[in-house]
Length: 149
Image 1 (cartoon, helix red, strand yellow):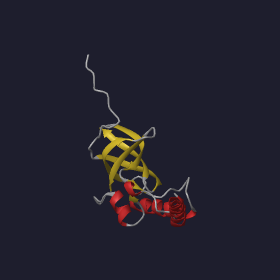
Image 2 (image 1 turned 90 degrees about the horizontal axis):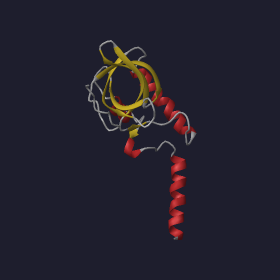
Image 3 (image 1 turned 45 degrees about the vertical axis):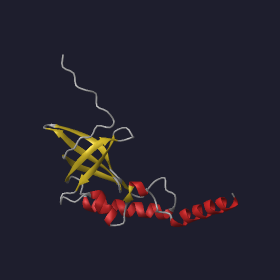
Image 4 (image 1 turned 60 degrees about the vertical axis):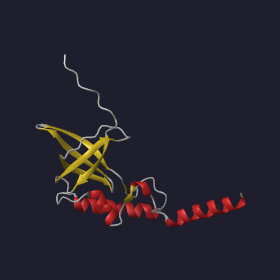
């Protein structure tokens, strides 16, 4: 009997894996049909690795929602439905059916890097910054609390 090793959550598939764009969900997530081997494909959501785009739903403020719509529109302009792209460095995401990966645009640019360059996303480690008035209010409250200690 031949057995294959179990895949782990930390396993990475280097790729590139060719994929067809089905739809853009938001600035850092797209739905694709990935061609995993000849005659076989899988539909999945791909979350950009190491990038955080503003949310469209469950937002902290209206400015974040507006920035989220701008990021999604930008990605839609880059990725036409039915078009092709490549995904690489694919790992299992924390939500069922979603993977984390880098996306290479048809012109060979990295989508995450382009979003950051355009000011439509931040590196994941620097998350947020979409609600400046809310963040400054939180900082002021934290400073006041610290001065009372």
